[in-house]
Image (cartoon, rainbow, N blue to C red; front, top):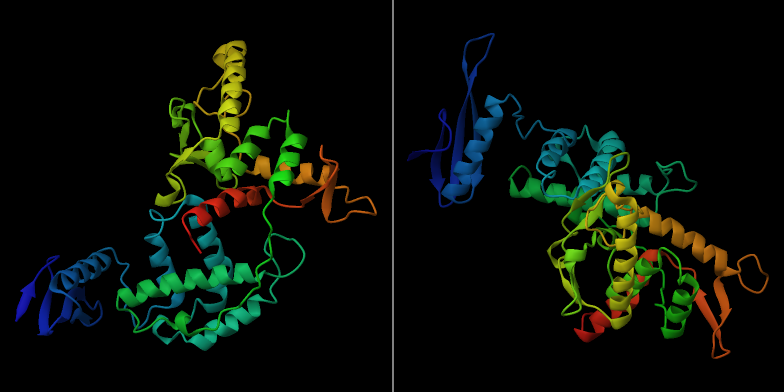
Length: 370
C-alpha cells in the first residue's frame, strides 16, 4: 500500500501497524545519472509520517538534508538550535549558543550523532570540571555551570529521539555532578526592617521594597508600568519584563514563563510608596517636558528611559559592602547595627535576588509547596 502525501516527489509505504517506509526522490547522481532516493523507516501515526516526509523533502529541496547516519553532533545541534530561536528568551538562546559553540562542539562536535555514547559525555563533564572560565575570572567552572551544559545536551538529544534519529538519549545514562546547595536563611522581620531603614531615601528603595514584598524579579520590577497597577483594588499585574543581551539595547518582552504572568496584592507600605513615586515622577515630567521619554514605567531613569536590571544588583552589592563592617575585626560576615529595641540586628551578606526569598517562602507555606 502506497500513500502519497506531503510534498511531490516522495511517498509513504505502509509496513505494518504504525510503521512506514518514507521514500523521497533526491535527484540524480551527477556522475552516473542514476536516480537517488532517500529511504527511511518511521514509527508513528500516518499524520506524523507525512510530516516527516514533508520535512525531509523540504530539506532536500533546500540542499540542507544530511542523512541521519552521517550527521554529526555539530550538524545536529545547528539544526536543533534553528528551532529554538522562537522558543527561548533572547538571553537564554544566546547562552545556549555560546555554550554549544565554545564548549560542546569543540569537544564532541565531530562525533556521529548515532554513535554518541554516555561515556563520552561523562568524560566531557569530567574535563569541564578542570576547564577555566570563559569570562577571564579566576577559577574553574562551577558545578551549576556544568549541569547547564548537561541540560542543554539532554534536551537537544531528547528531541533527536522524538525525531527518531537516535534510539535513546545517551545523556540519560550519565552520572551528573552533584552539588551541595548553599544554606540560605531568609531575612527575618527585624533584619528586613533594618535593611529598609538603611536604604530609605535611596533611589532604589522602591525596588528593594518590591522585591521583599512581592517577590518580583529584577526585569519584572523595571518593566512595571503604571497601567499594571490597580489603585482601586491595590494590586499589581506582571505583564512584561525588561530584557537584555550584552551589547544590545534593552527590550521589553513577556515575563519568564506563563506562571510569571500574575496578579499580586499590594501591602499598604508598597501602595503608599507607589503614590509617592507617582507624585515625584509627574513633577519630573513637567520639568523635562519633551525631553522626557514616557514609557509609562514606574521605575526608570530620570528621563523616563528604562533601567538596566544589572543596575540594582551592582548598587545593592556596594550598599551591602558599605554597611557590612567587613573591614572591622568584630564582623567579617554580617552587617551589625543597633535596632531601636537595643538588640543587635545581623544582616547576612546577600544578593539582591535573595530578597525575594521571604515572599516566596510565605507563598510556598500558604500553598503547602515542598
